Image (cartoon, rainbow, N blue to C red; front, side, top):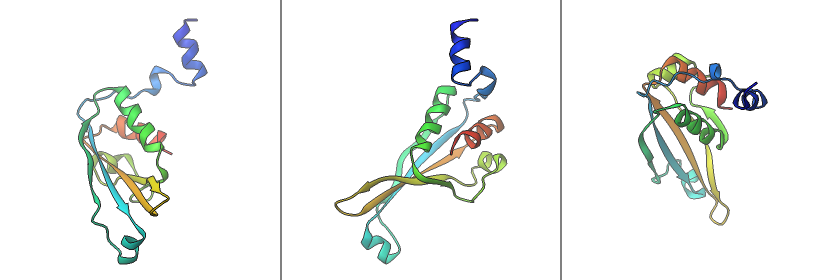
Length: 130
């Protein structure tokens, strides 16, 4: 048995688990920061794009964005239970709490919005984002 096969077995991974990455997919990361005053008024002006048109060129890029998405506290899909076909069309996003400033009470949320995902890429994201 080759060393890399042994490592993959230990990690419970195989090359078959890695989706073929099209190189066409990209995503945007948005943010919203809510202070207690913003919540009271029902709106915040502190929002926008943190990163735009980030390309997913290979499996490492795909795996990296999934890891980032899993770092969000209380993460969830915008439309409840996301389906691959909706994610492929860019309908819906993953969002959750990214940061909290205990001194001010401000909470920053992040959202991940995808475009041009293949079915394999969308299925991988849905399977691995918890």
